[in-house]
Image 1 (spheres, rainbow, N blue to C red):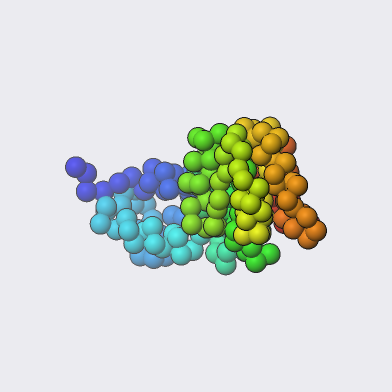
Image 2 (cartoon, rainbow, N blue to C red; image 1 turned 90 degrees about the vertical axis):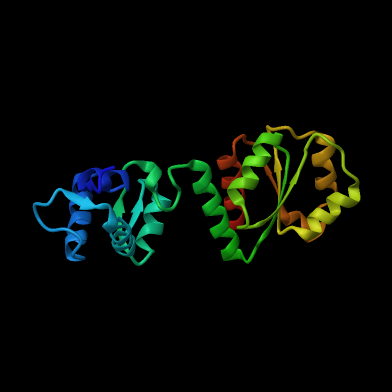
Length: 210
């Protein structure tokens, strides 16, 4: 096994593939005393220190405006990543980016509890995986009738309830929530008539920012 790596190839894999960005990263490694001008390879023993040096100085972002703004506000030097999957904010995924935007919007509004009604079992599972422990989450099967008391309990518990239209959501289920959302509680209820996790969460963010 080789005891070193080709510096340019390692930088490209880490997200510093664009020529100008790669030059900046290379200069940072030289300033940290991890390599020197003209040297093309780096000892594998130095890789953890090299990664630490780059992480402390740079914030890799894709071209998405939200990711660019987030990187510029990070306190680090914002640099354009390539490939997109190395973006430190969204990881190149529209769904991951949408989750981050939702979590940020919820924190700004002091919200942490979310109910999602509808969606297929596989999509609900993926949504739960993406959100993880960032928010408290209740996922409701939109094809099975629930006691009206449970819909009322969800509305009382949550700060935001999303009715996911254009998915597996029966009227008898959505109506339970709409009929129970009376007075100020109705402000918690958001109907998102679009498919896809990113579109669902974008609707939630738009509601929170209004």
